[in-house]
Length: 243
Image (cartoon, rainbow, N blue to C red; front, top):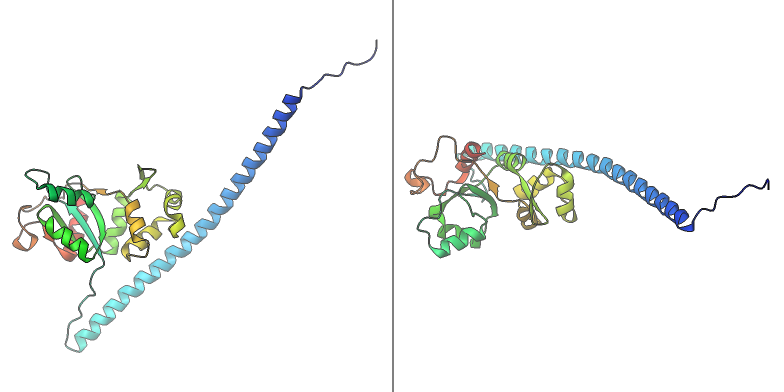
């Protein structure tokens, strides 16, 4: 009569408890690994940013040196041919030829004041000549590329438009190409690197505002005092007004 009755614990309860403990341990290990990786990535990103800053500075110094040497010899220094273009659509859809509309779609310029980066090659230039009255383009500098990506940069992740708020988004989309932070993306686009195509396709077309102070005459070419066509380095001034 004095014997104690032992409570029987169901087997399913024990299994569940064990499973939950395993899950908790796995989750803890995962979080620790993620934390460790984040610390390593931050160090790597900082090192890369310093390296890129040195590279840009060296390029600038070299350019100044070459210009000075040319001036001393009584000549002129001719800048190397630009590799990167920035194109902005400046006109709507009224009375547009279907071929022109198709080219603008291929260039991802579906709305007025949309902007995209492009690599300079024969095919690109031929396409731009066909849509010249509807767009303006030129050669952006590092400041313009950086400001556009930091201020108006959005990426394409799982076919969604995602703001570039953290480096994890870039690592998820472009990590396999060695692009893990915004500075990597800027460097790849600015130097038109080996993975420019993938990096540029990831960047969603920029939605710019109407230029501060307005446009002069969008129906005329830039060389005629208008706005359309190639404005070379003067695109940077337009980007400042539209960003």
